[in-house]
Image 1: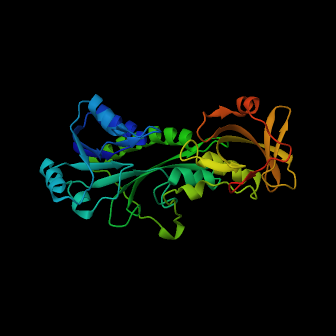
Image 2: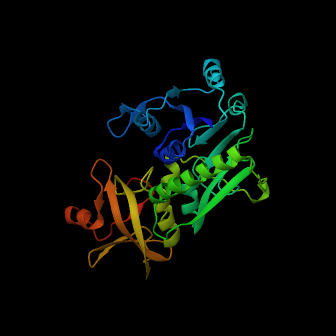
Image 3: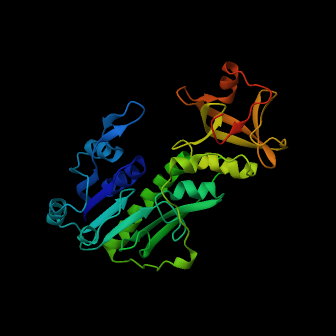
Length: 311
């Protein structure tokens, strides 16, 4: 089949590779424009463009899908199917172009976690299972008819970055199977039950601020749900500290929420019920460290505590 693929981040790359490996004709890869990235804000191409160039596929970089020139260019390709993975909301005049429809790969078991950040919110909310869903696009975001789903267990210490990688691989298999079904005319779709839907909104910096008055298990999920990006953070005195990885201790905490304690080389922070061990962290402007390396170079006062604001 002739396919237009749309995607931008690393999460979408395995799906693109799976489509090519299955022998389909990828007539165009649509992705975002090159943008400033990293601490140096150096302009760089998105991961999907890099992958497409490596596969010698034609690339169309866009800033808007409502541009009539872009719509005309995509229409002229006359694709059989359009595949969307981690891209953007498509207007009807775009997703209605393909003869056999446009489907999206979503990183959750829809209708749960509709929105921009399903992987993050599933972990933050303490889910033990998630998965991927392929569904045909319609006018409302993440509400289209489901084609297929694949399930996966979430590890109790797994971060969003680690889960995202596993889901990207699982998703690539789902995309390949979805194309087989469409090509063979064996698509049995299922309506979503919107009464069971939950939201996974786009993450803001304010969402990532740690509240140490919560139970340790919640803070643990919170940290791993935002790791490695955009990363949960707190304040130690006047300095912002990013927390990348933690571990539950099951050890009763102190009355001082956010209070820091170093015991037998372990960096512990008191939550609502228990101490939480900090395993990896970073003072803003410094390198990311294990807690052991951090403690070797830091002086922790006896009454030190993490808080939600600069002191």
